[in-house]
Picture 1 (spheres, rainbow, N blue to C red):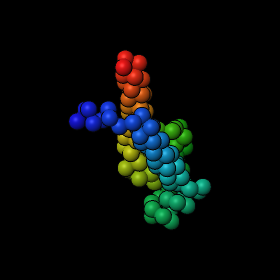
Picture 2 (spheres, rainbow, N blue to C red; picture 1 turned 180 degrees about the vertical axis):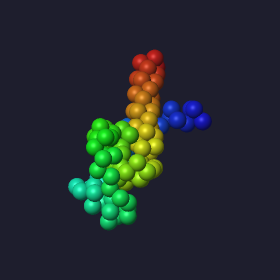
Picture 3 (tube, rainbow, N blue to C red; picture 1 turned 135 degrees about the vertical axis):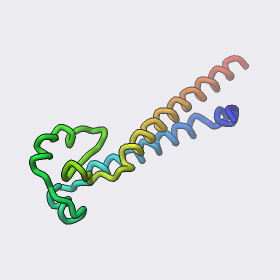
Picture 4 (cartoon, rainbow, N blue to C red; picture 1 turned 30 degrees about the vertical axis):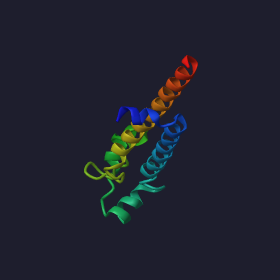
Length: 116
């Protein structure tokens, strides 16, 4: 199976890396936009959850970080879907792994051409 992985062209691995990056961007955008422009309104209308001003004030730094994404209405409810952060981690790892495979297969192909 390892040989089949290395038979794939570097451009194929690069395409998979770019696809992973594109999906990573889409998932990140979806998670970052989960609260919309008015989080209090999104909590009340879309989620049916009470908006806790005091909780949000005390945890404002959590709301601004890039990972893990969170937009909490209160201590118990997050508007960001629970699958978002694991998907971001998997897609980031997949993107890096595919890029590394592109470099590895390119290196192996160049090395074999220089020998022969």
